[in-house]
Structure formats: C-alpha cells, structure tokens
Image 1 (cartoon, rainbow, N blue to C red):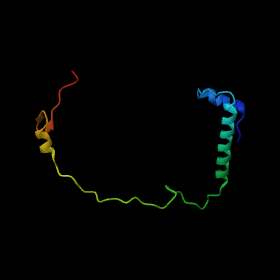
Image 2: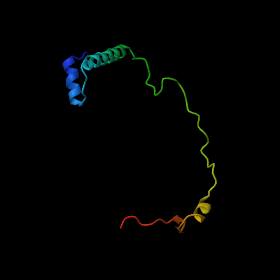
Image 3: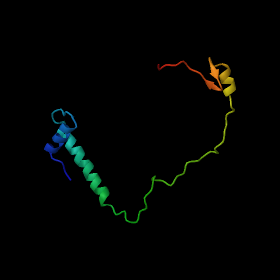
Image 4: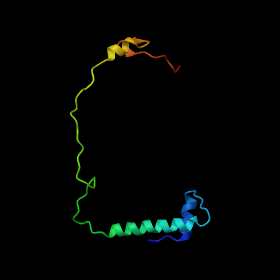
Amino acid sequence: MSLSLDQVQRIAELARIEFAPGEAEQTRNQLNGIFVLIEEMQAVDTAGVAPMAHAQDVAQRLREDRVTETDQHVAFQKIAPEVGAGLYLVPKVIE
C-alpha cells in the first residue's frame, strides 16, 4: 500500500493537521515507510509460532501476601478533630 500526496493532505484535513510547505511530502514518505515495514512483517510465516504476551519468557517475582504494618487506627483517631463510632466525622459540604 502506498499513499499519494492527495491522500495524505486529505487525512491531514480530516485530522485538522496543518502542514508547512514541503512537510506533506516528508510525511507521505514516512507513512509509506511504515506501510512497507507492516507489509514485511505480514509476509513472515508465523504458522508454527504460539502467541505470547512477552518477547522473553520471564515471570515476575511475587512476595508473600501478608500484612506488614500494624493497625494504628486508634492512634490516628486520637488526633482527629472529630470521631464517632470509629469513623472520621467531616463537615457537611452539600446542603
């Protein structure tokens, strides 16, 4: 697939992109280069290749899922301006 200069200018118009003089030709060349790369990648036979999520076979090290901090809500509620029934009370902001 190859784009013409008119097609690039139409795409730029639809995307509300303004080109400086000579910039449309450079953009056309870059887009056509991308299309060539895509065509090369699509030409590769991948029939025997299994889909994968990552290019390398790696696994993330996981830590044990356990609590590492002590419960300090009582200490925090002692310094809170207002507390009621174990909850922080805040001023009403919507009437």
